[in-house]
Length: 264
Image (cartoon, rainbow, N blue to C red):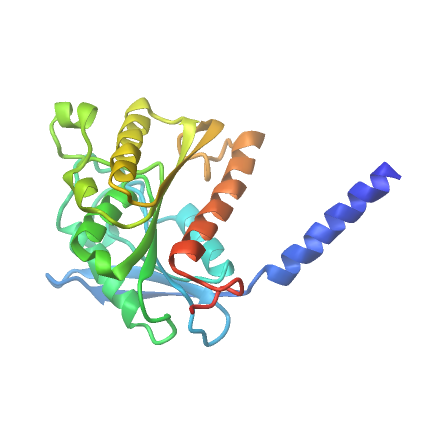
């Protein structure tokens, strides 16, 4: 009897997943940054005319690759219209750059403008999902254009300028944190780099003290980049699923979406 109940539960879960899963359309386009740089952009959204809730996806310094495309399509399958500017390849920046190139911020902002211009995007504020270096772009953008951004989801994000001197890296956070009023969700593994955890923790406290809506989710036994590691542990696979649902819930809440993933 117990095995029958378990089997029924698994079947019900699979049926529910098939009901809520959405087919996804995606394409790659090229947009121009203000200085004329051609920026490759991936666009993904559910099949249909929309309008869909808009999300800007900002990749990490490892580059925009298969894992990033998969993440973008997961967001689209959840019901979002996603624009992902590739801030590296248009400027011929090699993977894993240590320094931050401020010119690439124009490419990310151009992605935001393109997203807001799409006819199948809901009008109003957008959500932002960033990975690693991506959340640093997000806080810079939100400090500049907070009126356009409803919420940020930070996957193990930089909360300090990568070009800042060592003492600032160790003991402070980026000055943009003091200017933000954008709700932010932090997602990070318990075993991530100590400096990343420290800076994220400081940013959390600084935002919370100022009354900015903020949450800090730590995943036990999860390492750096827990959501796409090729050697994921069973716990990290669960952490990834949980993180995707937490991210969706955060965006739904602060973008003020309906349970049907439509804009109000």
